[in-house]
Length: 430
Ligand SMILES: *Cc1c(COP(=O)(O)O)cnc(C)c1O
Image 1 (cartoon, rainbow, N blue to C red):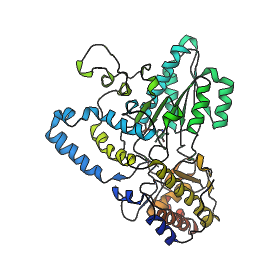
Image 2 (image 1 turned 45 degrees about the vertical axis):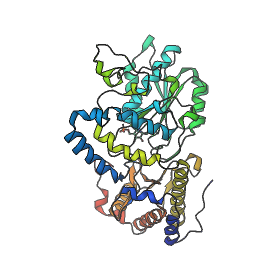
Image 3 (image 1 turned 30 degrees about the vertical axis):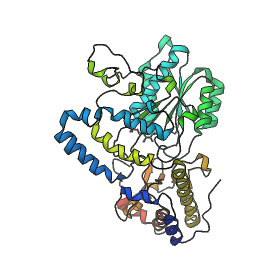
Image 4 (image 1 turned 30 degrees about the horizontal axis):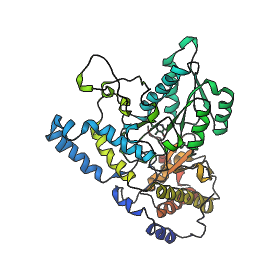
């Protein structure tokens, strides 16, 4: 299914569409520079204006004046649970099943290790951990690291198996289902924008007795997620992309209520102790999601990130999803109708049920094209190999932005602006 924008052929049509957009007023909550069309909210979300006053308050009043008492008086100690509870609401879990903490990479390790531990108790012969070949690299690297660490209990090595798509996963479940420990799948792929079916995939994986871990980095804040109705086992995700938490803001880790009593994650730091300030010599874990905490949290980052989470929670998720699909559909259609003479290959599904909130095109000169676009104020990003990625954040991107971005891309391609030498140089971060 595709939305149809063929009747909208001039910029004015999109200015009108922005005026009629029920989410248009959210844009004023964000601080974006003039003359910039920001299509990289899937990598680093825009800054909520209120983050400045919040950070100021935490620095001057809470830290500067109230000092160590702020752990109690300003509730620093409860921030991971409080914010985790809000994130859980956003992704369809119960309040006590999520904490905001650490990074996605670290949380992947904790959830994988928990899954291995659950399985070892009842089905100790399972050794296969599944993820996607096209997954974000850290997800694969963490699985590799854990497998290396686990060694070969009972002389039997753990094994990483990479799948290419849902059909491949189904085939694996059929042929080696009784060997699978868990599957770690990223709901929306970082490169192609492909979105997996949350419920169907979870069901497929659990059918053979394996556990399902979802990475929601490119989902929460842009597409609807309901982990409870999907019956997922674990989930992780970052908050600096569509949740606008700020650079390096803590990630989250979610665990189904049914597992909270049974898991043992290996990073048993004092923040997950049942009574951390009893300072006991022996570790006793809590039975809530705070057992995923390790040590002292980055309070400044947590506090400012809560603003982005509150904004996300104040939006109706289906309206958000509708707008996201409208923006991505419009972008795809305008590129097709106005840039059809250029060699751009769409990598993102046309099928809306399998599309996240960004659109990727491959092109022989992808890197310099993105560099030229950025110099003209249209910020997207480049991903290996040869992929141009454009993220559409429904809270602050509008329909006129899409039109203007496509027109700028047209200029860059028609006039071959990307050939300029300054656009060939690559920075450390692309
Ligand atoms: C962005 C992203 C990450 C980032 O992990 P960090 O530990 O925050 O660096 C991990 N997984 C996926 C799928 C991502 O898109």
